Length: 472
Image (cartoon, rainbow, N blue to C red; front, side):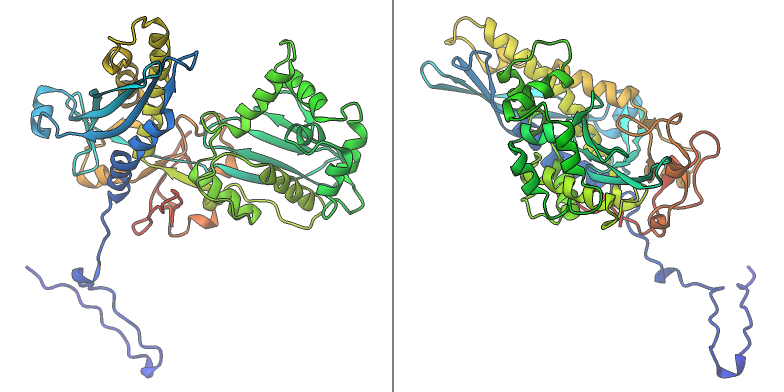
C-alpha cells in the first residue's frame, strides 16, 4: 500500500504560517449522535407527551354533569411482545402495549371504581431511529412549520405609498386572529378567515367597553398624524357597549344563526379563553412573551386581554414606523415538529373521538352499580388514528435503503410539507429560498430539484433542536 500523500508547504518567510489539512487525524473529528433528533423526540412522547394528552381530556363528565366522571390517572408502556427481527420476518408492526389506569366516579353515591385498561399498541422506535410497520422499515420525517405566536408583516400601500401593518396571532391549536390596517386608517379583525369586524367591536367583547376606556388604553401609541384607534371608533359608532358588541360579533362569525347574548358570550370564551379549544402551546406562549416583552407564566396557554392589547399597540407602532416588522422566513420563526410531537397530535385526534364515545355511552348506561370503566372506554379510535398516521401520512415514508448514508440522510430530513405545513402549489419563492439564518443549521445545498425544491432540507452536522423545537 502506498503511503499517504503529504503536501509540501512553503514557509512564507515565517509570516502567517500555512497549515496542512491534507492529513486529518480521525480522532480529532467527533460527530454527534446523528439520529438524536428522532430518538429524543420519541423518548419525550413516551414520558411526557402521552401524559399531557390524558391530562388534557381528564375528567370527562356526562352531558348532564351529575351521573359519571371518568379520569385517566397514569399510563405505562410495557415491553414489546415480539423482537424487531421477528416483526420483520412475520411482517407485523414492532410495537409496545400502552396501559392506563382509568378511574370512574359515580356521583350519586361517590363510589370510585378503578381499572387498568389496554389502550392499544404504540409503534416502538428501534435503536436506529426507525419504525417497523407491517415488516417494512419506515422513517417519520421531522416537519419544519411556522411557530405559534404573533407575527407582524409590513406592506407598502400601492395608492398612498404608506407602510401598513397586518398582524397574525397563530395558536398551536384553535382559531387564527388576523388584524389588518386599511389606507383609510381603519383597523379590522378577522377570526378564522370569517367576515371582518372593526377592532373596537372586538375590544368591547373582551371587556374594554367604553370609548374613553379604549382611547385611554392606546393613548401612549396612537398619537401620530394617523390616529388609527380614534378613526376606527368614529366609523364603528353604531356599537356602544359590550352586549351590542357581542351580538354584532356573533352575527359576523356565525351568519345565519339567530344571535343570542349567552351564545355570543360563550363563543368568545370558547374561541380564546378555553384551553380545551384554544391552546397557544408552551412554545406559543414563550414566543408571545418574547415578542411583547411580557412575563406571563408559560403554563398560561390561552390568550389574555393584555396580550391582545399589546399586539394592537405593536401594530400601531409599526404603522407609525416606530417598530420593525418580522421576517417570517427567519428560522427563529420556524420550528421543528419531531416524531414525538407528530404522533402526539395523531393520538390526540383519536382521544377526542374516544371522548365523544365515552360521553354517548354515559347517557345510555342505565345502572350505575354495574357500570365499569371498561364498559365506557372504546380504544378503536386511538388504534385507527395511529394506523392512519403510520400507514398513510405524507411524513411517514419507507426508509431509503440505497446505502447507509442515504438512510442517515432520510432520518435527518426536514419537510415543510404535510398536515399543518405548506403545499407545493401554495409555496412561493421566498419560503423556498436560502435564508441567512440557515447558516450552520440547514444545509443550503441538499434539496431536491423539481416541485419540492426548498421545501425539503437536511440538518447540518452539529445542528440540534432546543426544548421549544427551534434549530440551534
